[in-house]
Image (tube, rainbow, N blue to C red; front, side):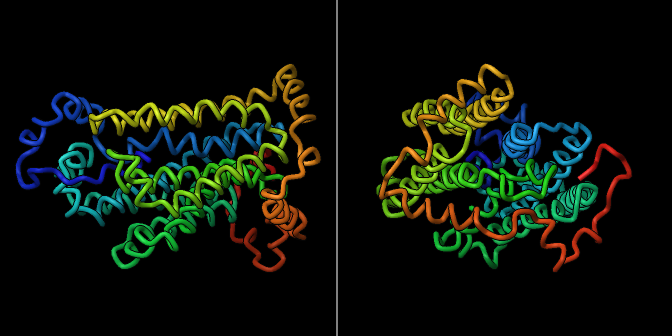
Length: 367
């Protein structure tokens, strides 16, 4: 949610930064000292999203390759960080009129030139894709998918549809976030049959829910929910459905149960009146929720914790439930997992992507 910034314009768009600090005082001063570029705000969040997929991979396959993790994470962060420069370039005029964005966006603040921002974006894209190519052709395609979905979201020619219209916004953001949450998985494997699809889908839908409310009116969440009632209802039902389906079909009982109380932390920020504190408060909560999920997934590698998790699985399983409300999701799940293609490598017969990939000659990079 923090990644998209506040939406209310400043009251003094043409004045110097010092004039805009009066309303928010020390909060904006602290922000300016801490943050020199907007993408730096996103690095911890993006790194955690990457580690979600990695934690699932490590727990399921039990294999750890530090070199591949470093290369994969670096390529992901470089590629995705270029998107923030792209957004800043596309929204430059709007950002200059926003007192908060002028504090933490170097381009809007005037600390870097337009040409320098373009140059940084291009360098990040090149380095990110180059490192991604060292992993595999499929991983490089994933990074390109992130660039394309964000391009549709931010480009002036497509923004009205893909950023404002829910019919385009939700599917495009779902693909975008799904690629982010699963990037750590596809760094190490092309296996799609064991990918915990519904858990990642639940995280993506939750993120979209928060984004829509955040963009609608973060200062008055209740009114925002009323204005977007239909979308909120559909997303709420879908999030809950995917969550409970995940709880029933995957062996990650403890992580999913632990995340329930942490999700209620979002309500703690509803009464916060200070806009800056609210922004950083929501970002901290996202950090905590994702961190708890990653930590609890990795804890399953501890024998005692895994044994408790298995005991919970004897109670919470799809065989124990006969719920009509989940029947549609169960049918979709069966369709997905009965599909003939179990691994992305099977598509190489048609696409020959592996021939176009660059591979490090190192035994530690075995597929």
